[in-house]
Length: 321
Image (cartoon, helix red, strand yellow):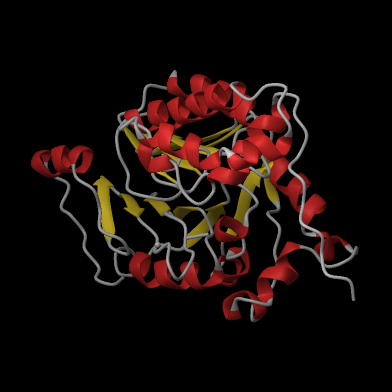
C-alpha cells in the first residue's frame, strides 16, 4: 500500500544497541537492530512497499513479510550483501498484496512462504482466481502494477494455528496469533530474547490503517493481548519503528475513533459521513494519535459506525451503460 537506496549495516555494539532502540531508520536503508536482526522501512510512495525484517540463523535466513514482488527484489540484494546464508522462509504477516504478493519471488530463491492458517482462508475469499473461481484481487492489482502482472500468485504452504517457533539455540523467533485485528490472519514475529516485535499491519506508525478486512473492536482487544508481551521495540508494517508506545498509540487511536463515532448513534449514515471533517479535526487535536488520522479516515469511520449497529453509507449511483 505504501513510502530509496543505500545499504547500511550498524555494528552491534553496546552503543549501537542503545541507538537501535532510540533512533529511526531511513526509508529503504537496512537498519541493524540486534545481532543478526534487521529492519527495513519500505518506500510507501510510489512503490507501495511494506516494511521488512529478517533474522540470520545458523543455517538460513527468515524474512518477515514477502512484500510486493518489486519490494522483494529490493530486499534480496541487501540480504545477500550481509550474509551468504540462504533465505529459507518468508513469513506473511497477513494476506494483503504488499505483504504476500512477493511470495513467488522468494520461492524462486528457495524460500517457503509461511503464515497463519487464516491467511490462506482469506486468500480463498479474496484471491478467488487462485482457487478456480472468478478473478480476484491479484488480477485487479496486476492491471495497475507491472511487477504483479509479471509474477505469479503463490499462497503460503507452511501454516500454523497458534504458534510456530524457529530456534537455533542463539536466536529464537516465535510466530504468534492473537486474534483478529487488521485481518483475521494477523501474524506477529516475536523475538523474546531481544524483546523485539514485528507486527505487520496490525500495528502501523502513521496514517496507514486499512480496516476493510478487520474489526476495530477486536483490534483493540488484540492489541491489549499483544501488549502483555512487553516488547522494547516494535517494528510496524508501515512507518518508522519505535518502542512499546506504538502499540499504545495504535490502540488509543481506535478507542478515540470509536468514541467519536458513538456520538452519532441513531443518526443516519449520511449524517456521520458529512461529519468526517469534524471527526478528523477532533482526532488531530490529540498529539499522541494525530498521525494516524489521514486519507483512510472516512472508511474507518464507516467501519466503526457499522460495528456499532449503524448502516453503511449510501453509495453513489453508477452511470448506466
